[in-house]
Image (cartoon, rainbow, N blue to C red; front, top):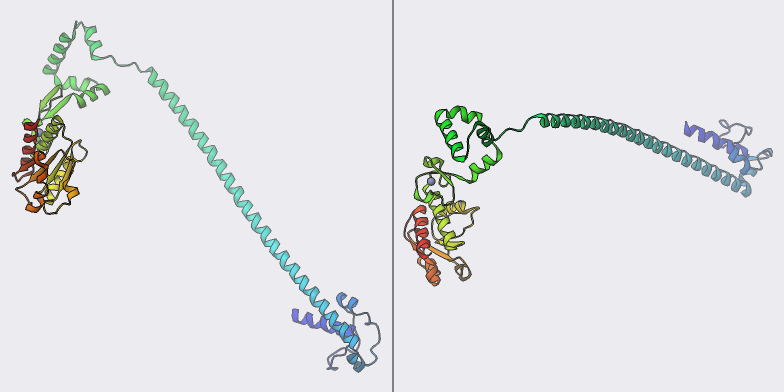
Length: 335
Ligand SMILES: [Zn+2]
């Protein structure tokens, strides 16, 4: 279509300039109406065509024709450019309208959510107020002392006697009926020790000691190693020792010692008996250096620590608990 229109426009321009087509059988013999662009650029369009040869040979006419064609091309180009810009503007406008619609939808959603949150908050506040009112209405429980005093107990000795008698006579009822409290829970945690019969597990600071089977012992949990470690901890505290280096022991032994001393106030430096320690490593600030001689230990390694003199503890015992016991005994003798 565009090609045909261009051809028609071209032929019209040619006619307006009195230019005859070469193939006369197809071209019209008389000039038709010229397009606007060509009319201004072709002032000579109304002159009758005298002779096609003279029109071809007239340089002025040819130049005007070229100018007219050029002006037409320019006009077409400008029109196409304007159309392109209009299309671009339309597309941009559509995009902006879509974006605006999306934003409006989001705003509506956010507004809905906000309203829902407000409703939930109001409901929660109402529920809390109701709970507070109900809590305030509950009478606070009377203490055991109040109950016993009201019943006629004169002092704490009588109160204790009454409670013990009740507990002995019907422990199940009393244990179920007496309410526990936070202070009681705290006292059970700090003033009561459940320990086994091992001497190293006996507490020095608990007010109430109750003996239980070793597997339920607060100190060792049935482990002789844990019991020995707890003993060493206590002896170290008494002797003012905060850091002990242990040279020797298998990797498994060292791993066990590492897990034992984690989180405790006694620091252990564990050195493999096979590694040749540097002078700096051998010059430890630990208050005691244990040479665990019955286990893996090279002579060269132990020799690096001989300079520690008084601080050295030689242990021949092979097991961990035996070693810990020996070190604890040495700390006790030193202290
Ligand atoms: Zn124990």
